[in-house]
Image (cartoon, rainbow, N blue to C red; front, side, top):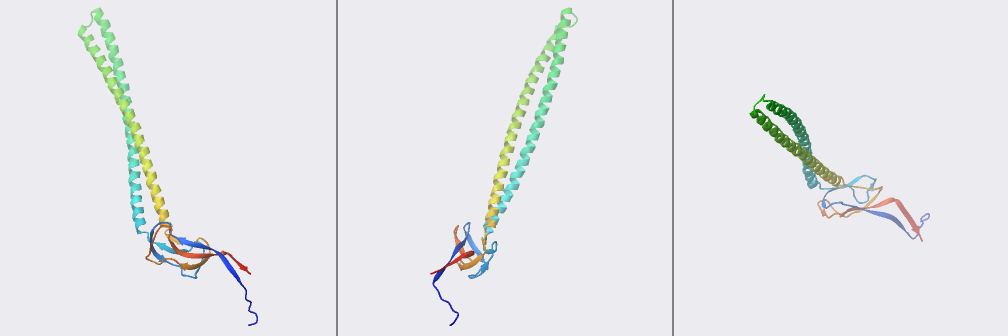
Length: 221
């Protein structure tokens, strides 16, 4: 008929496969062949029951790790308190040693003058030796408390690493859940469905095929 023009040529466009990121079962396909879709539109959904269970488990581990981290920090404070107490004991023992040493020197002077018995000198000397031993014991407790602080701080660092690791797992699982909704990357038209609801696909399994309508051109010859 008049007005009808015929010609030879081809239409070319960019094809896009809508595929899964992780293995799983197709739950729902929302687009039909021939549908026009816009960028960001949900085209299909994958089963996320296993991912949700894994996410809940990871979130519980986060809470557990955070509790362990708080406990480790509390232990550090406790060890620091013990260290301060041990230092106070050392100061007290040194004061007692100083007093005992003065008492010994005074008794040694008096025994030379015949004003005090030798037994008192011996008792004061024994007291000085006892105070020196007590100081050594207190210094050992200070060293142990310092070592306890370092060990507790190491536990804090380790607990923080566990917290960071499980939080990273939570983020990864949440990303996988978000990616279970297969969305159109750009405007286009659905050409055909590759899979159907209920099918189990491997990672990268195709669900739909669409054409990018913004990149269409025709060639005539």
